[in-house]
Length: 329
Image (cartoon, rainbow, N blue to C red; front, side, top):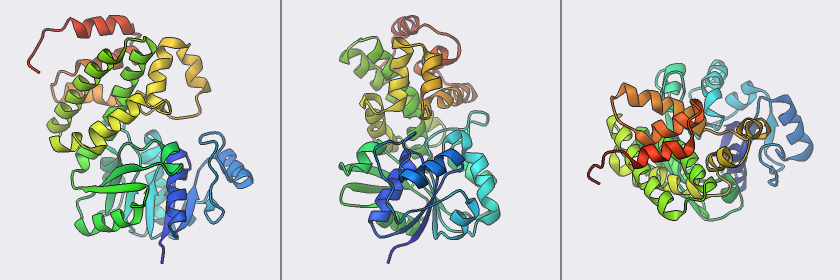
């Protein structure tokens, strides 16, 4: 018999998970706070603004009531944007019954530099059990049933088995990890690097440039991750290099597309018209601050930050990277 599952956030990933879990026989409730999006989904069974082309299964119950989605679920999945994560947790807590939580949000909180699990621990009840779902998962491909894989990270081995059994499907392979820090850092930092990959695409600099950039970017991911207490092995897996490759090459990648748009379009106009979240923008600021905190050189992070926040010129930033004193590989 399936579980009663509440999904917080009806963007592309929230809808994708609702499709997967409902098709597996679970009773799913999907919540979104925006009145216009909720009404649109009720009329069309589709979020044609943020995730067009994918119908929400009829048995999925749609609601704007955080009380209903929180109280009626055996498991809650958090799939909201990182900038809304803390406020969403605050809304849930008055109705929270202690059920397991799955963090499906990738990102870092700008002001605090916290990972989403750290925000959860700060705002949630003591002893809340949770896992983090991450990996190379472009929502449109997963929702279309194309073979994909992800990782679920939790320090609770019993919970790991439960989460793995819940999400694992014929076309969606789930691996387990105990390295929550590494999985979250990889899932967030790859967005920063993907913006730079998009800039390289926009400048038509070629595969040699992009490959060298991503190799050195992965090195920065490993360095900052290990400095923050994560395992290097994690960054060589699905939530590290796997997610980095996907986000840096896919045409559906919001962060890569944003980087390309920096070169090809008026970026202010692009952001105004964009209906999706560019998680790499706040993540670039968060990691830029963290690099100072841990006293670490992160030249690629600094270059991406400069381009986004300090009107840095892409070609000048690339020239600066290429002229840096050589060190051992």
